[in-house]
Amino acid sequence: MAAFSESVLQDILAKTDLVSLVGEYVSLKPNGQRHWGLCPFHHEKSPSFTVNGANQFFYCFGCQEKGNAFGFLMKIEHLPFPEAVRKLADKAGVLIADTEETPQDRERQAVVELLGKLTKSFHHLLLNNPEAQGARDLLARRGVTPAMVESFQLGYALRERGWMKRFLTERKYDADFLSKTGLFSANNPDAFLFSGRLLFPIRFPSHETVGFGGRLLAGDGPKYINSPETQVFSKRRMLYGWDKALPRIREKQQVVLCEGYMDAIALHQAGIDWAVAPLGTAFTEDQARLIQRAARTVVCLFDSDEAGRKAAAKAVELCEPLQLETFVVKTPDAKDPSELLEKEGPEAVRALLESRQKGFDFLLDFRYTAFNRDSGLDVRGFVGEVFGFLSRVDNGVQQETFLNRMADFLGVQRDTLVEDFAKNDHSRTGRALAVRSEASRPRTASGRTAEWSLVVTVVSSPELFGVLRRDLSPDDFEEDRCRALVEVMEALAGEGRAAFPLDEVLERLNDETWREELIRDVMSGEYQPNAAQMVRDGVLKMREKTLLAQRRKVKARLEKAATDEEKTRLLQEHKFLGEEITRLKGND
Ligand SMILES: [Zn+2]
Image (cartoon, rainbow, N blue to C red; front, top):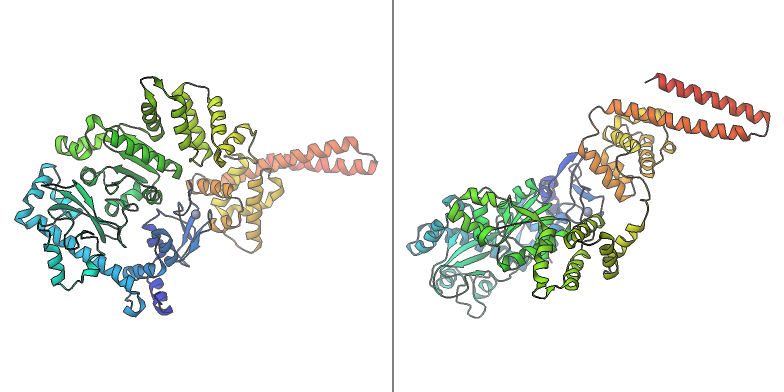
């Protein structure tokens, strides 16, 4: 275990800006003292993940995940502490003495350094070596521009299989180390895996190369191969093009998922530079989670053949339960983006994205085709398969939407389907759905009621709390969420806080649904214009409502009053309330 001195750690933290570090993974918006975004550590639709630039800590109001820059990097990149320290030190330009790193740290670092150097060499070979003519021709034929070749640092590896080992051995790399780089065959440690191939470096968002994809140009062998798993490379967890696409993915909150390296490059060339591809294997849940940290929608753009449709179905099934909205593009005539770019140009590639259907609708079509045989539709098989997917969708609204679509699709009654689903599904969600369809009303109000609008406006413009406080108290609010919020603001005001930032209000609100509603509405910015007028009007209306209700109560008690003394007192109260109401109306 590496032991870092406290002063080194402090130095790294001092030179790291957590807001920009987190910003590489989460799209953040400033509000109050904090920056807000969708939490990368739990599923949510409205932002409750915050970064405090002042104290350099992050905190999620939803899942309570918190920590500093090291903690963030460890969690988001699944790194052990020493790795996170080393990575941040690199970024911050802090030198770590060798004694503070473990041999594994140094080895990992050395692998990445070597792959980085090789990326440059392979690129140089592709551009200049006569042997790479075939590779250059292929790229030219597929319409890949020199700019893309440069940007993706495409490369070429010489055909002779023993060359790489000799070359690196001459440079004092030992055999044991080289066996861990993923460059050589496990069976024949002298044989370079990628000989004679066009190379696609696979990189981290930091642009470090951690592996390669290689396309065969001539001769026998698989058309595409990838680096094997190494200590720096895991193909299940990475996506091709991620390093280039990430900033655009965050900006668009969307990922275009395509089948292969050449497709990803074709899409980028056509201006769809938020496209990525799995690494020669089927799309995995880890990759879906990677996307989930950066985007909200996934557009699947796979070949229209059986394999492509299957891949799209899998992507939909993995993404939707993670609250990623999916679409599937209908690719015409089995043309993939790379082929389209070659034959019809970038315009045709862009046009592809226009004709798409919702992921779930695609899934229904796909499963229907699979279960519709000569003997007709295997209803049980079809419904069972789709129910299996639905039970993994841990979101009631989404589940209901899908069940509605499924009922339409099958032309059956929605209620029958819901009932079947509840019976079929033994998971928590299935029961929840069944209960929900019977439940009459939610426990408290939701949506934009008058009370809620008033409270949200005050939270958005806390300087107006005084206006509310003058005429209303928490008990005047009928909705639990509004009463709770006003109590929170009362408490903050009671502590002498003149203006209370949203995060402090949220910190004291103990209901996640309310927090999410509040964040969503405050962040919408809709409650800020004309806030003073809205608060005055809102307070008046509520005050009037309260007074009218009080007067009704007094009147009822008056009718039952036993003694003259009580009657007199109640009459006075009734009169006072009447005057108050008149005064309020006069204020209008
Ligand atoms: Zn969270």
